[in-house]
Image (tube, one colour):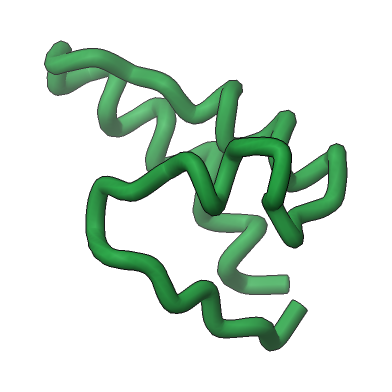
Length: 55
């Protein structure tokens, strides 16, 4: 994508809200990467994220 999203940490309204510059697929991935505080779930989520950063 090569686009820098210049928003303060924690301000998700510009990333996931109506003004988002992300594609529907990207927004869907963000939504699916919810893991809570369980360490096993965090590891599983990180494993699902890796391919998106390596492509």
